[in-house]
Image (cartoon, rainbow, N blue to C red; front, side, top):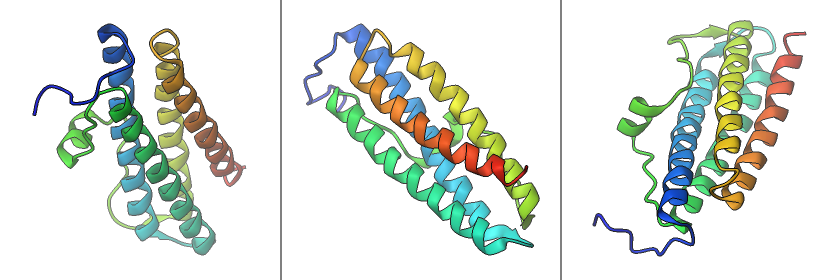
Length: 158
């Protein structure tokens, strides 16, 4: 089914801008959830337990917002694509290393990954300023939560 069965409240141009921002956010959040789970399974060292649990909190946050982003895309008549192939081809997040990682390297990688995602989200906030304020509001909420997480991860490096 190619044509959307959902009538969009947006003009075609605004729907395209907004849909692109939502799709890009969707794949980045799916990737974040997978990265955080990979880190969760492979972190070792002092303070293992607290970092292990904090990674699960990040997974939960990413998954919650993934669903909200996908549902927002549907609400404006855009079919979301969170398939593995789409994530691999489209995510803009830095790679996370394979194998076991020390607490220090895990925290450093998560700080860098969150910084990259926040930068990408802030651009999308600007992009949706004229196309859809409802989506912009969602992107702002996601950014706010991820900036809070970013602060908490950075605090471990201090």
